[in-house]
Image (cartoon, rainbow, N blue to C red; front, side, top):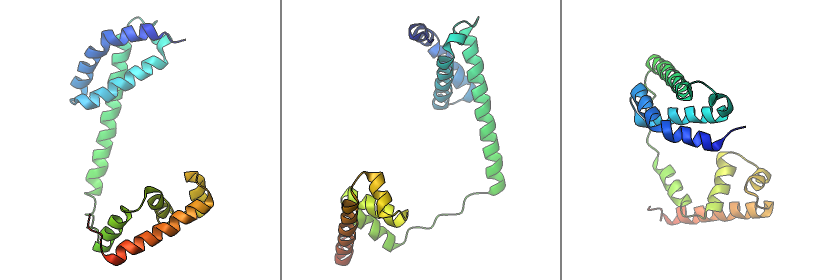
Length: 162
């Protein structure tokens, strides 16, 4: 059983030192915060064991140190992969028609946009859209019909300025 009060005391007494330690290991306070947070989470889950350890803060330092090494190894592997594969290909700019369609979609109510995107982009049948949104099948059909009509009206007038 975990003792929340003793864990809280442990956290309050060690968190500043552990953050300094984590920052010294990885050189970035944000990354260190992630590592230290993961270390405390692991300590909490094993608090019955960690609290009886002769040096709970030392246990946590070892855990944070191992997490930092794991992070370093992952980053090193990622850099090796990236250096072998080269930079990603450049992404082409969207064509004018796509910009007009996206701008027109933004003028529709969210339900209609969602139904159109699920139907046309994910090829979901009306029954699955109904199940996912929690709306009746008839309502989904209505959203699709109104969404198509709304898109057609906006695109026909050419009023797609953002």
